[in-house]
Length: 144
Image (tube, rainbow, N blue to C red; front, side):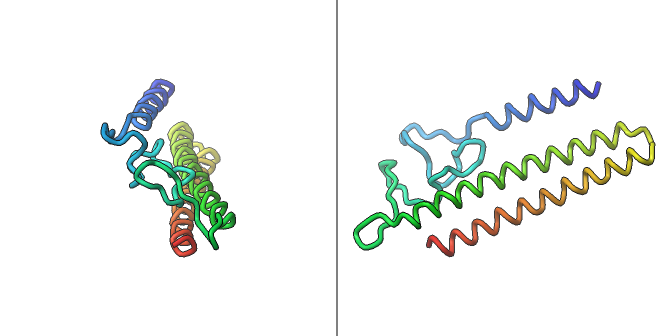
């Protein structure tokens, strides 16, 4: 029964994540407000300027490309993607702790381990959420 429930949640979760968001037939590249990114993750060029014709313009400094600003913008987007993945892993860790809790059958040592797993997952989730918020604030300040 537990295997069936876990399989059901996995299948429903995969179909929920993979189902397409808003599709615009008149725009062949992307809706740049972030609503149609892959699985809700930001793109690697999230903090770079994107024109209407889907071309990416790199930050300029004295008539040439500012490599430092370009690399930092891409780096911040990569860090945000990794932190969002960490949040998903933390949610999985909480679910795993819940499964351990339900399978502990009242044994004190297993209950204690399950509670620690759930608490560690929740702490990781909170840290990941705050870290994503901090990265967004820092990128808005530095790259504005």
